[in-house]
Length: 225
Image (cartoon, rainbow, N blue to C red; front, side, top):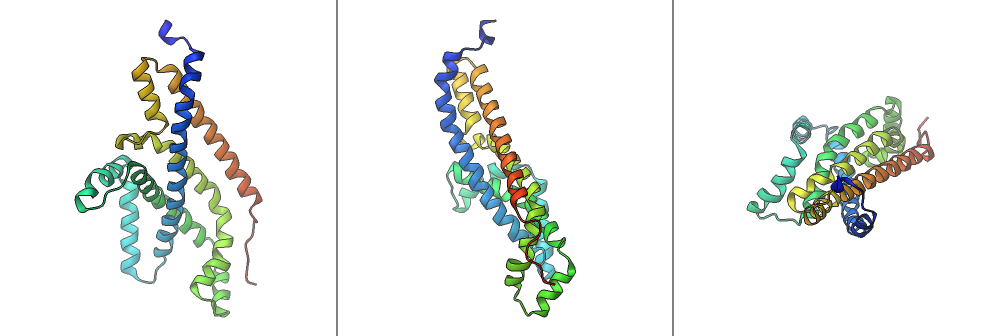
């Protein structure tokens, strides 16, 4: 039963190491989120291209990414791409894999948000001879962003909880460090519990922050009437 008793001294001893690894986890999530939002927007806009070939190509690319496991994509980028002369560090591989994977999901969120803009807004923009870029920048996206915030936030939180998969390519994120601590000290209760608490706290804080952003964001963007 001694192995199942909580050791506060040991917990305080390993906490700094886990917090240090938490910085790596948060960095991977932050950079992955930025890349995912960028790729999601690119995919969504290309899906609206007048070129049928381009639209179909992006559609099948997004479906392929969404239909294959994240771990397979991580392994492919880290172990296979170097054979083609493309090598990245474990962190950058993880950021790229997370961003590409969740960018495919976010592309559907963004596409739905853009498609939700009233047809009259598009027609008014054309009547004013606005360029495509100005139409998206000044008219469409300001109105489409608010409805997309909850789903985007959920995917970012899901990405955060997927970061333990990056340990498969030797990235020392929180869970991997907890496993190392446990194997070296033959005590897993404290490190795994601390990691679980940190994941819970970070997820709750992120969910609250996303909710606050949604509340403070204007319900209506700029409209043309």
